[in-house]
Image (cartoon, rainbow, N blue to C red; front, side):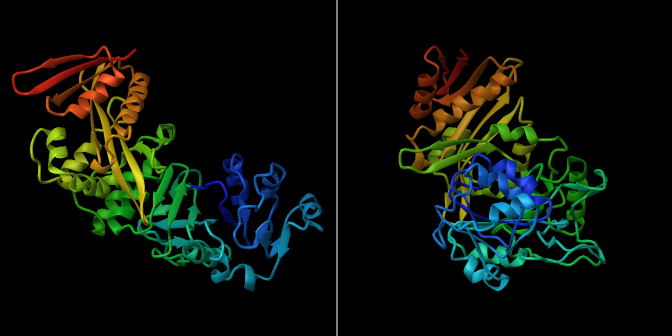
Length: 413
């Protein structure tokens, strides 16, 4: 989520210590935040924080106060890198927004399924104030390329209570509204909330909740008519291993495609992808002129994915202010040792190596799950797909049937 050269605001408390290890490999980060704490020191010492790429007050750490150990105070004392100003200046959303790519990172106590965030109270018991969270979330929204991240553990009280809830606790206050929220992160994944409907938000949040609470959250959402009555819940598996199945490909035009496993929350974008394709692409993939891609069909597609014996990867690109699916590749169990593989790529991206990349990547995952070969059925006129298979598997067998279809057998090396 955090790119090299970004400017960060990081909340205080335990948050800096939790976040810092994940930023250790970044370069040229900048800081514009209310409080400087000891958690930032390792990033200063490693020259991760340089402030060189800041467009507003470059080469300076902008903050209101410093709170921590004597080691921290000695580091800050008479250090020209630090520029302390009042909270009226540092926390002003209009000032914050002058920083391009400003990323606000803060924490929460509770988040409901629509994206409302409680920061300061546990029910009627006030735990803290809302601090600078709202200021920086709104400032980051106005920043060019900026956004906000809420980090929250999935559970509390020794895993007996979910922090992602159907509704906020009685007495809990809404510090950050569902209209302000961009991204919510737990140890189980990332929920992208910006420009999402209530239905999409429910699915995003349910899949990053603790596995033992996911089904319950879906059932509560159904009672409130947030989602369809027949909605399939996210798997109760711990899917943290899916982090190792994230990939990226830089195209010849300089743009990036990010690949990751298909998730339940991708239903809306998957449907949009299928409906955006030309008739020939649909025919080559499904062997018929399919006109309707129903919610039931797409739910079934996801339900069959176990991320081991059956896998689907999606390719995602930035399109203006939103991300869209531009490619889908999958394999499905055919026999104990063979999986059937298939692809779809947006027409304007043909010839850029996307299908070849997907094939190579799916083969890697398939090998990890004890497959020794791919098989595929291709229409004889689909020369592009046949060429992709021939390039990857020069010893593949192509068996033509009388119906104009070609059966392809592709043993792994």
